[in-house]
Length: 595
Ligand code: AMP
Image (tube, rainbow, N blue to C red; front, side, top):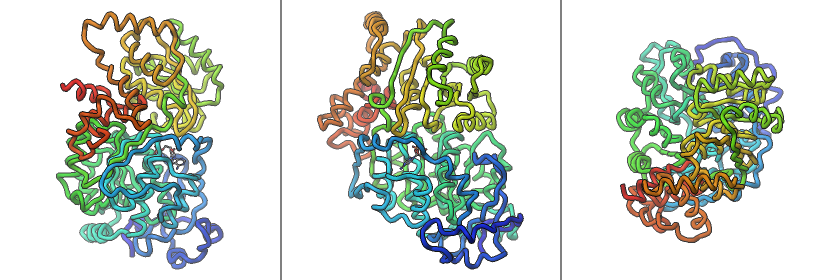
């Protein structure tokens, strides 16, 4: 008998399963699991609210470790509806084809053009169909065959590019083919040590995904739940700032794929709840952000100082929006003979986002905002960025009083409140979300029609990051920024970005930028000047020309990808930051000026 916490004997009924079990093809009645399930079906009521699932409690069939992992378990209509009913509508797939992808490394497997080009098995293909993914996104075209052929991967791709499925699909497909292996025996043994009592087991996930924030962890977990539907794999998620007891109880029900923030995972390991001895697939998602947030010690503790299999034994995939030196070092330390992927951003400034900058005095901002909102239409999702938590609360109150269904997300709100706010926003119940930059980091808020910078940031990277919330996954978007005297320090960079993206530039902004540059010309070069270069370099690269002056530095990177195009180091920084997004300009700048 399997080990996965079947001791939880909550009653459950599943009368419809037999009638409906056929959705993954004509395999009705073929599943060993279905045939021997009979009346002793095991499962549990899973209560909504934990892990981002939301909703009411529902019956979930327990995955079963024994048996053939490659065969789908029976269908569960209710769960299916919950997981897939909100999938992907209104995405403009045509836009995907313009996204450039560069793959470098020894013996790089050929990319695919369709999901059918690679054998991912019945379960994965069924779930792709249920998710209504008709074709792979650029990062998926490349990453799926790379991961399937058991290669390590370093991919520069952002949230919105489809990167989550790019790693989850091939990992899960591999797990379904190989079965639980040693992880099953380890967990069984751990159960024996504690007399097989429910709630005492240490879990040995087969795959671990590390993510910087709880929001991103929850998003990955939600995707993992979709792609592990009708399989024996049980995904779990753990993150800080939430009740650890509940997370432990969830883990104890079985955990084959764990999504975790680094701090909470270390805690779980120290409590003896998680063992990484049999982790075959390790993913570091948004690695640059994890380092920015100071997680390097925890990450190294998890990957290097515990029982995690060594590189080369495990398969490791790193995803990062940027590729600064710290990430190159991490890649060198964690990856073995890896393939390097550079994926252009889905929905670049130039193509998909209309950027408007308007002069609005502080005292006029609220009334201007009301005008904008009434022009946008009440139903389209609008994200309003403000500078402070207090400002967020005040603006939310104001909009509420004005009759707008809105909510807010900022650092002072509890985890529960933030999740609730995000759900209300995503579902369209509150189509206006007032956010501070920090609280919005790493969130996949797709289908946002309008991003409004009620308060502009002083940092151009932050600006670019914010407007990237709209125009995602091929949709068209609008970004409006309120500009006044307070925003002098972003003038030049903002102008550069607008010009690069071929946007309308207000003449006052041009004059201001000229004045600003003139004033500061004696104080040395603009620290952010490199952002502008990046954009120009990109076009040269994409057109097959050279990478400009920056590429030359690429040869000194530690990754072995510094070759002809100067990837890595300064060279890569400029390839990637090119479309003006998310790039770590200050890094390129440091490399360029040789500091
Ligand atoms: P990610 O970059 O992983 O955060 O994904 C962004 C969004 O794109 C998510 O809502 C995914 O569900 C969706 N997505 C990922 N891959 C595809 C695909 N091949 N077709 C359509 N939508 C996709």
